[in-house]
Amino acid sequence: MHLLGEVSTLAGAYNADYALDGTGTSALVGTSYGVALADHDSVLYIAQKNHFKIRRLVVATGVVTTYLGTGTTGSADGVGTAAQLASPGDVVLTEDESIMYLADGLYIRRVSMVSGAVSTIAGHATYGDSGWVGGSGDGTGTNAQFASAHRAVLADNQQTLLIADSTNYRIRRLNVTSGVVTTLFGNGTSGYLDGEGTHTMFRTVNGLALYGDNVTLFIADSGNNRIRRADLSTSQVSTAAGSAVRALIDGTGTFASFYDLSGLAVTGCTEHRYMYIAENTGNVIRRMHVTTGVVQKVAGDGGWGDTDGYGTNAAFYNVLDVAVTSRALEIYAGTKYKIRQVK
Image (cartoon, rainbow, N blue to C red; front, side, top):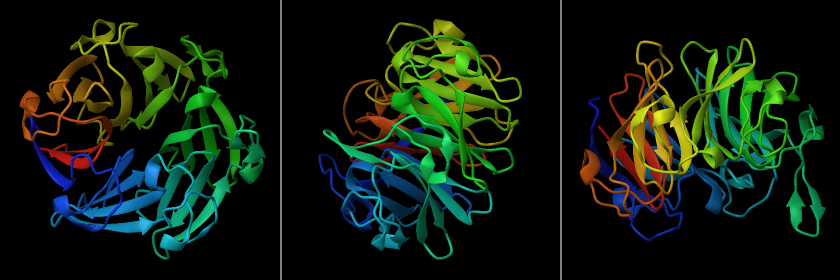
């Protein structure tokens, strides 16, 4: 797509934070924390953390249905809408789309795309004075704990799930076959420090994207207003873009500034060298050239609103996540109240 794109509304209605099946603007999608494309970019799956559901949107028709979740928070496994979800923040599909993984707050869930069966493969919670809480312990399967499994990406030929454990300030690694959970990046203390492996520091990780080389992991470090770059072959973490300043400033590398970083998306191929960036209360979508570090605005003017239009003439309420088609011809944005398309 060109630098600036035409923004339109696919589903949802302003100021309607509910979960109601339907078509187009008659369907209500609430706040869409995570979005993922499937079925040759014809279907969008939507993680609704506040409503404890995964929704399914058919792009061509705008039809929205409930795919998973009872609508009541919980961790009970089950099939389809009989399963309970705790706090679904992200949806990840395998390349063959046979399995869906959910970053579900204190848990990692696996979904059979054939049967709709939901199972818990990692994480457990304990009940305390403040309710159900997780932890930071590595381990196998449900012996491991997460504080806030918020985002995830698949790596290592679909054998590893990399998880943003946001309030543990860590990137965790889950072997989806053995169930073993380890800490890959972050020492568990909120801060800002580049370096190697667990000798690094983050402050609220809100997004992950794995570049097409399957080695370069981009991390939206919202609390530090920076995009971090991690080399999975060497475990080295560096700063790719952003500064200590929280602002909407285009630029190159650390001369750019971000405002409330959220979800990230890449196409998965190295021919397209852009990563797309959702800035939550910044209310914009931007892109970064992964080689040069140049950051540019794609849509939104930074103000609050839900106006459709071209490029910076459009307005958003909270851009929480983005998904990009395989040829980078369209972007889909999960926002507060609506699903928006940029093309």
